[in-house]
Image 1 (cartoon, rainbow, N blue to C red):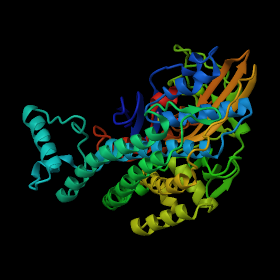
Image 2 (cartoon, rainbow, N blue to C red):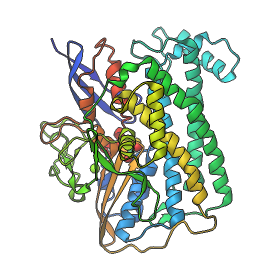
Image 3 (cartoon, rainbow, N blue to C red):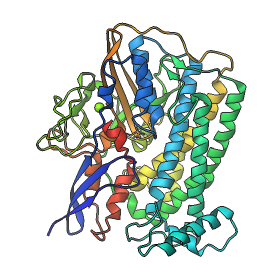
Image 4 (cartoon, rainbow, N blue to C red):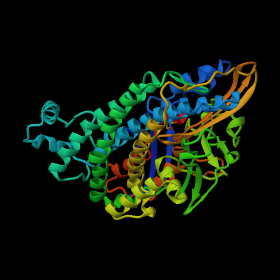
Length: 504
Ligand code: NFE
Ligand code: MG
């Protein structure tokens, strides 16, 4: 007999996500993703000065503010008919890269690793590391004070199989703590050029405000070195440990198999070449991205906005009582098809295009070390691997961008805001393809539409009734114990959902 298994709220993600699954004989047969809050950031911009956009839209999220700001200034660049000088392009890349490193490390260590390791191993720690001894004391304090074992944010947790090697679990706890330090470094790297983080103060149309100095370059580089060391000595080995302990997760959570990337980190002023290329992939093929094929469906979403429109024509009209709807997330589609976005899409599209030798080499090395292949990337472990691998090659690429900066030269150009205009900004947030569409009338914003990575990944059923990427990835997942649905939670978390972004 079938049953309903709820994951609501889903913890260790950003924002308010509820998931309802239908389960038969312990296998998920259907899933429904619900974005449970409304925000209305697009409507807040109506009638405002265009220059407010990059600051207000960064407040969509504290995890990917730089991406939101970047999409916004790219849309304004297009609407104003300007583009940044070389220093501006490079500094934008460096600020965005720092945010990627922060966000990707956070996702693996603070949000996901706890699904695989057993942090109670720390109670058996006999060494002298002061950080680990403090952590052990803290865990024991909670465990002795609660009848139900509670060690927030680690426990309670689902009863399940976790890694059993105590020595490794303790090492992973150490890396969890070091990840906090690496994240702080990544934010400080961003702040060197952004003025402050997480919400960058210096992003403007036409470039980035602030002088480029030798001191800033050296400061960024010295912190980058430490983050690079963390990636190679902690993160990549931890990824392989988890992969070795849970090889079944190379087959769990496959998803729709369709991937899309807008591309990010321009390598030239005309934006034609990007470090992460754009593209769409169905099966093993990659084709050119055509953004005229994007539309947003609303059938299952609490909006009365017309369905199926391109975002340049889109509207945001809330309809909380709408019959048949179950989410505040719209359902974006490409050519009417469900698309997964994110690190997996970026990595696989670049790998298939063979346009980046560093990426191809890093991914091939991972396949050899983990004993898997490109087909296994469509999985829980594949998504985790993609984030680690892209972080490694992106951090390495930052060195070249620092080299190319010219101290003393301008990083932005002057501009004037036209009375009317249109533009769009496409980039890649850490969680995937991000687009902002802007329309200006009488010098004010008359329309602003965002289609955000988690809008794609956590989308509900579309106008044809076809489930979104996370909904599809959950189908077929075997739950060992339907009261402890950790397998489903691992699938959902592999997408790194951010609901604040998704509903925006
Ligand atoms: Ni709130 Fe975001 C990223 C964007 S996800 S984290 O990365 O844009 O929808
Ligand atoms: Mg939107």
